[in-house]
Length: 200
Image (cartoon, rainbow, N blue to C red; front, side, top):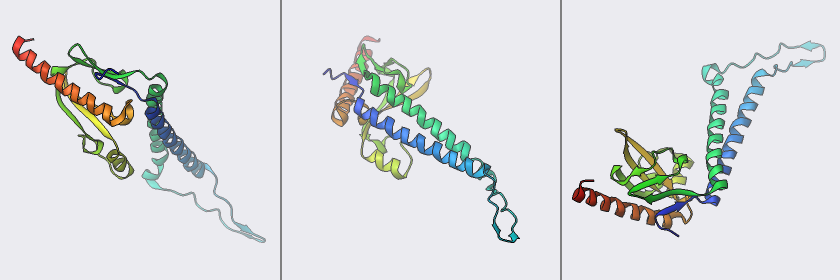
């Protein structure tokens, strides 16, 4: 296998797609339950020969009224990731490759491609929870401690861009991603030296 090329892991991306599908299903189910409770008429309480007034509809205030839209938004965002990881699992293909003094990334990473090696200003391979921008807490933080990632920051049109590749995104996992990071770093230093010597 070419060490300068990373391929998508079908199994890893399928697991991610299934996880986000569960998140989406849970969010939509909770939104439906919350909505049903709000529109259903309050039950009338009655005993033989006695009538009690119907309970007042609950009023949870502004935050309560935002619960359903928030859950729908969360479910929709989860569906976006189901599509992204599902497409990677079905199609497979090249996630990233080093070629012609540039890093070529799959379009689903949302990064400029190709990225000239001289434009990569920061390259970090580490445990995922230690990478820049990997905040959060709880289960997400624990999950990040169990995987490794490659963080890249690059210059693009006068601004900085970022991309992260994780071991469960690619075939070969941690070892393969680490070797790719080492090779990318070596090519980056070589490109910088060639640029200094030739001026281009």
